[in-house]
Length: 215
Image (cartoon, rainbow, N blue to C red; front, side, top):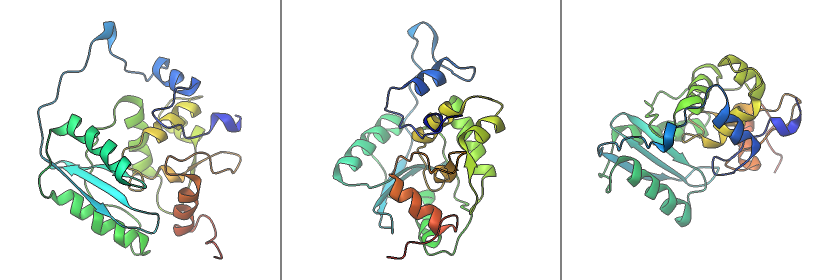
């Protein structure tokens, strides 16, 4: 496996890896141009959280936490809120318990006081192969450990799908809580990361996988 096969690929990037995912055995593209039926509106809420890796946007529904957004400046907030309105309904409510639970757990995580998130998750913003890989990651790659892209592909029964796993990591709507920062190259490199490699280094250092920076 080459390093180029083990890189997290943002979901918006058009690459051979994304083509692999669309045409591979786990792809679930609609046939004959059919579109998925519209979902009924659902209550949702969002809030901001200041953290050591920058501001995070947290959003969720009654089913659970649905989105975590890195580096949530004004432009990123506008883009994310537009996606949330399209997925769940035009206007958010004031608060949702899962969002506040996630905020409290993230505060504890960054303080080094929490190693396992218990907030319920709403997987509405993921599907198919991507969701399958992300659920495996969330359930079986604990704090302080890492897994290779190909190893993760093997765990979901898709041998040779390392690049598709990179696409899945880039599509992750729930970073940190669903720990795509724990997916690394088999040769020891960090691989890619939607939040930036410095953020990935910070998260792995927090969990003791990498040494803390001296300054």
